[in-house]
Amino acid sequence: MSELNSMEVDTTETIQDIAIKLVTEQLSNESRLATSPTERTVFVLGSKGVGKSTLINRFLDRDDVPRPTLALEYSFGRKTASGQGAQKNICNVWELGSLANSSQLIEMPIRSHGLQTFSCIVMLDLSQPDRLWTDLESVLNGLKQATAKHAVPGQIEEMKELTAQRIGKEHPDLSTLELFPFPIVIVGGKYDVYQNLDSEIRKHVCRCLRSIAHTLGAALVYYSSKNSSLSKLARDTMNHLGFGSPSNPFRAASFDHSSPLAIPFGADSWARIGVTPSNSERIGHSFSTQIPQLPIGNGGVLPDDPAKDTGFKEASIDELRSQKDEELMYVLKDTEIRMKFEVVQ
Image 1 (cartoon, rainbow, N blue to C red):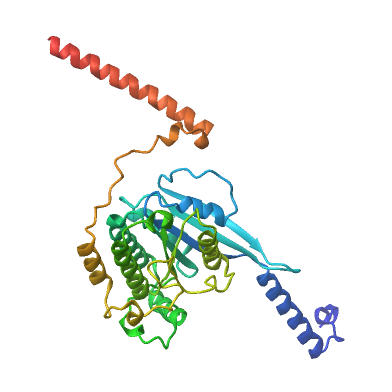
Image 2 (image 1 turned 45 degrees about the horizontal axis):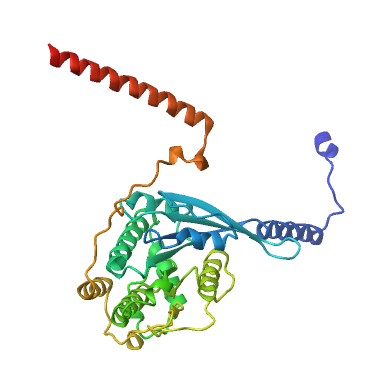
């Protein structure tokens, strides 16, 4: 009894006071969650030398002189909305340098950040129509394999439902499409060179890219770093994927093969393209028949050794590498002397 009497009990706190305290605590937690950073991931991959690094630098407001991307590079952008307690938004940006032997590298962004807030920009070199489908097919196969490997059960179906909502549940072609589970924007780069190609070639390229973008539920834009309006559209598109603003980067749609294409999600149709409903395999076969494709290669030129690039200096690693190089030279010289001695005997 004496123990109970000695306990301090706040008899003045009413049920209403307790309710107010709980609501205040809940609002405080919600406010804290609202101001915590939100993250999205944009993966930029596609044709080699098409201008991926240049586009990323413009998106991130960087003045760096682009250098060839050797494998897989990571950077990020950050935006804070105006107002007190504003939410901080982070965009993880990954760039794949080359499509040759890249299956494991394609997995990395998905494995690191998951699929929930993942999107892709697939950049293709319009100035090389004979490599266009080869590059695109390599990208799509790599993304499909990585997605199937790292998606949790039921996630792909749920995300494809979001893709269907993005293009419009009432779209007449919906049942004929091979939707990807995350947003994809196909960017046709080097439009400044492409616009001077033969008109028939441009028609074939236009029909192919419109067809594949439509069947994937993707958006499609043409781009050139030398054209300010096309650069702005591409940058606005990256901002849309990375930060959600602008909510619609496409001010107007353009479907004419003689002009830069700008086709938002769900804006195209088989009837508008002028073809019967198709799938990615038939689209690729038709295009490859019209414009024979070259296989993926390393371009025949090996990149400079990054270990000798001053931009990649790391004192402890460079010292260890130098030591190992000396040891290797010693082993090679010793082996050479032994071989000469054995020949003499």
